[in-house]
Image (tube, rainbow, N blue to C red; front, side, top):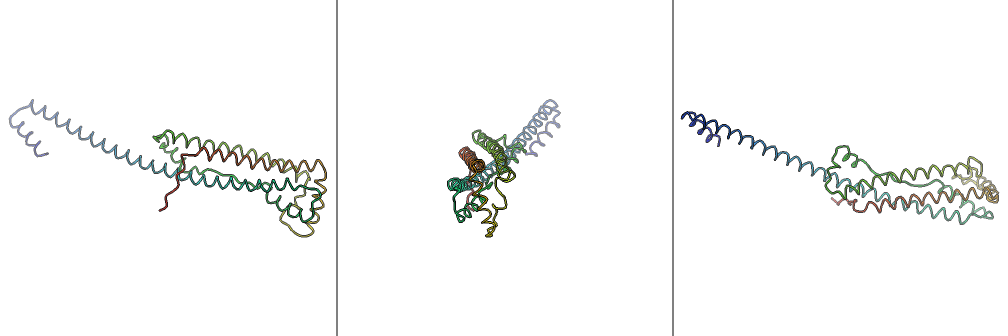
Length: 251
């Protein structure tokens, strides 16, 4: 092809066809420019295709991360439900006439259930990568993009609320132990005979006092309420994430 154009150029120069040569030169420049533009366009298309493939891979990875989050949320919900069952038992069996054996079981259950809760934190690694690189704004599926944004906003918002419930619960626990309603040493995993006997006498005396009993009962109800709030908030998050999670395929 190049040899063909050289022959034309040589012929025009030999025949002193300046005008024709000038027009030819312009045409050749135009062809070169068109060729460059085509090459640039092809290169841009290839780069865009590579970028889209990388973005799609990250989106799939993000959906798998959300899937892992959903499993953790379900485990967290189940954990808190089990704790509520224990707290319900503590409320139901709060009896000032309980036997020492009943107290031993009761104290052990309370020690295990008191301020024992589980929360969940979303994995933000892939999401932050997409945001920081500007790739998240390029996601073409608007519905998916909105779902992902709402999911993380809701998740973090509810975790902030849960932390406030936990902080409030520490106040009622402080009244139990710091104000001397209960002796902390009798609500530990020390199962020595003397500890059980002394703890039994003190606990029965405590719950026979109407004010102290109310303080203790309120703490149990606050504890239950905290678990219920965690369950409610995380159930809403799980419902909201529908359409996002993608279970990883087995290799």
